Structure formats: structure tokens, C-alpha cells
Length: 336
Image (cartoon, rainbow, N blue to C red):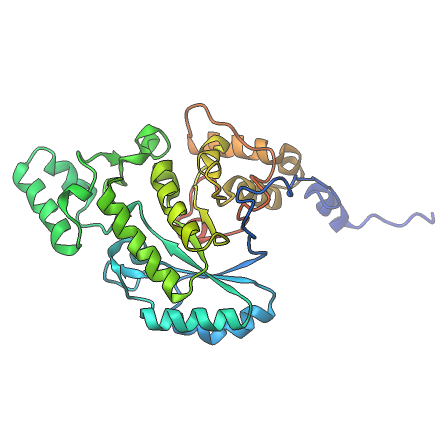
């Protein structure tokens, strides 16, 4: 016979969906119509400013047009990456480098036609007690006073700047109406939306802008009330109408993303990441399910409850698409 024998690897490739196309709408309307979003962002995760500066030429030559740094404020003592996400003092640039080093980095990025995206953590401050301690304190006034004293001693904030009464944010509370007031994992020192907190956070934003930062990522933005975020966006756009800002909305719920997108703030496209991850690891079946199917299955696996609307495409043309970020790598979750 002249027929060519079938190669074993051809069957395996076919099972994985080789040659299959799935078109995901990618170029819809942008959230921030007056702002030009970066084409590709290099995440200099937990890099000191000096190291970013040292590698900046390489980053530019690789085709990136923006560099995202980790949170710049003074944070909980320690060299672990997660300590950066526990702010201690918004008035100080400390930990990855000084304000002067940040300014030097921003100056060089402008020369290379790049922009620096700062990462800000405005939902909460540093952990001063375990969830177990806070639970115990709800029945022990003396213990509660001790924990509250730690907050005012270790930060420049006042006691009324924090959210009271304490509420453990775990389980369903991560995604329901309690997501604004709950203390993450029962430990994050949840800030209250009030004029003094907004003022101190905007002073931090101004420090970044004065150094030359030209983009902002808002961490854990789904735990900020939209009005809280809106005040910060207004401040940024007063300083620079073309400044790119986006929010981390760690959710598969399109409705939740749209709460913040309606303010002209694109979000991190976790639904698209879930689809890509499942398509690459599971093959044709996951590809055929599309974004909606992948998110629905992931939500069921992780026990996500309530009415959830899953997207069928990229959230917007300026949403931030990624394969991995520090949440997916450092905090593996069931639906990643």
C-alpha cells in the first residue's frame, strides 16, 4: 500500500486540540477611552528599583512598553513578597528603594519611551494579629484594646480609620456584600472609606506621580467601594488625564468587573486567564467550552455560590490580559 502510516504523535496532538481555532473577541470598546493603554507590561515582581534600572534596556529591547513595580510604600518588616502588600506608612517610600531611586528609574524609563506602573494597596494595612487573636478579642475587651493599640502604634493611622466592628472575611464573604468591610482572612487590617484615609492615600499617589510614575495598578480593588476608587481616579486624572490605571478584580463574575470598569478603570482579566489555562492543560473540550464554560466549571470546582455572570470574551480592549501573576503563582487557588 502506498498509504503513509499514521504517526502516534498525530493522534495525541489531535486529542489536545491541535489545529483547532477558538476566536475570542479581543478588540471591543475600551473602558478608558481617552487613555492609551500599554501594549505589553513587564511585571518586575518584588524587584528592587536598582535592579529594574539595571535591566531596563533589556526590557525595552524585548518589546515591552511598560514596567510594573511592586508596592513602593513602607511595609511590614520582612523580605517576603507578601510583606510588600501589607502597608505600614503611605507617607514613606521604603523597602524596594528610596523615593530618589524611584525618580531615577522613572527618568530612565522616559528616555527609553517606557512607562512605570506603580502598585498601590489601599484596601488594608499590615497584619497585627492572627485571625484566632481577633476572634478571641470579640469576647475579650482587654484583648481587643491590645490589638487596636498595635494598629495605632505601628501605623500613622487613627483607630477610627479602620473598619469596625471586626468581621472575618472568608468563604462567601470574599465575594458577597461583606467584601467591602471584611478583614481578609480575618487578619488584614481593613481600612474604612473616610476623608482622612482618602487624603493619606492620595498623598501616596502624589509621591509616586512626583517621582515620575505614569500608571497605577490598584490591588484588591474588588474590596474597595466604587466611590472610594472613583475619588482616586479623579485625583489621578486631574494630575494627568492620560495616565493609565487599572484594578485587580480577582473574580470570574463579569458584573463585579463592570462595577469598576464603569468608572473608566480596566481590570485584570482573570476570566480569560482561566480559559487559557484550561484550554492549554485540558485541550479541545475546554477550548470548545469557551470563556463562559471554563469560568462556570471553575466556579463550580471552587464552590463559588450566588448569581454569577460569566463573560464570553475579553472584558474590554484595554483589560489587562495575563498568563500568570503573583496571585496565580504565589497563591495557587482552585480555579486558576
